[in-house]
Amino acid sequence: MAPEIRRPYDRALAALQAGNHKEAETVLLELTRKYPDLSGPFANLGIVYQRTGRSAEAVAMFKKAIAINPEQPAYYNQLGIVHRGAGRFAEAQRAYTNALEVDANYPLAHLNLAILYDLYLGEPGKAMTHYRRYGELYPADRQQVEKWIVDLQQRTRKTGQAQAQEAG
Image: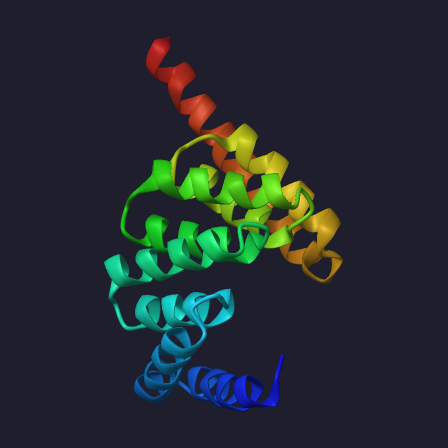
């Protein structure tokens, strides 16, 4: 990346990390105007909008980033997070799945699919598959993943027992 792009981009990322969303937004908007073929400023603008509660604008920015660079699984993953937060679970599932079509080993898409299946869609078997895959791909979280899996197994057993009692 050329220095005339790198400097303001780094400044925008630092502002974003510091929680200075207004400054990050200002710099990123300028970068998107000057360099409309770069996906990173659009994606980070999507993060700014997501963090400031502007879901529709976040979706638009992630879609723009994806249109420019459809081979970046992080963009689909972030789009899925926005959709999940807005209660659009089918769209979230599609976005996470798209991330995995780009990179089957992208750990965060596995994690977010697991969470979606577990907590929002009530599909424990699918959740288990993605929790396990996330744990394989990101061993630093393996202990935490094992706890999630045990919790999911316990909840699934309790649900099965309750359903058996209702049927009996």
